[in-house]
Image (cartoon, rainbow, N blue to C red):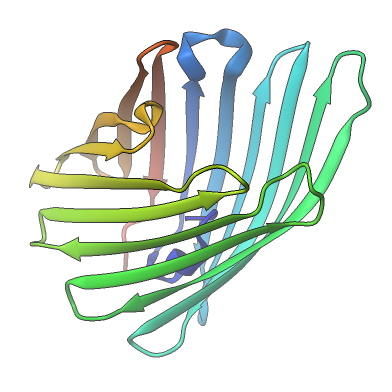
Length: 219
């Protein structure tokens, strides 16, 4: 949500969480993210702190974002990020970036979004993203996304989320890049949700991902 600030107004009560993943099961590529969202009278604020890597190479990201609704049909959001990367024996690289977007509620069931990530320095790529979401029911949602990052070919992705029970959800995602395929489950108990997903690259292997979120119950 912090990376897509136009979604922030959809959050109606405070939440906080932690995410951890280990790309291709390599401890040198392990990453952790802390995040929080705080609703306000006019919208919602979000922040995140991400750290990844090891002694030889590491990266950090600090983000702050704000989103608000402009009526019942439109949400807007704007965020600012600070990035740093360090590699042993090389000078530390730093940059800032601006990101923002729109979320349009075309109908009660169909939603369209557009997002732009614009870095100040050229070592971070420009990114465009456009997507559609269709709520087939309260238990089922279909997402379709088209992403363009720098000079790389565009990537198309789709995902299906299904919640047969209030306490349980499952999901599957497919994309034109094999490493972006994933499957996962989410379990909920009271104010806590825990999710586990995994993706698979044909040559590099599995990337496991764990996320735990606490959200205050709406009053």
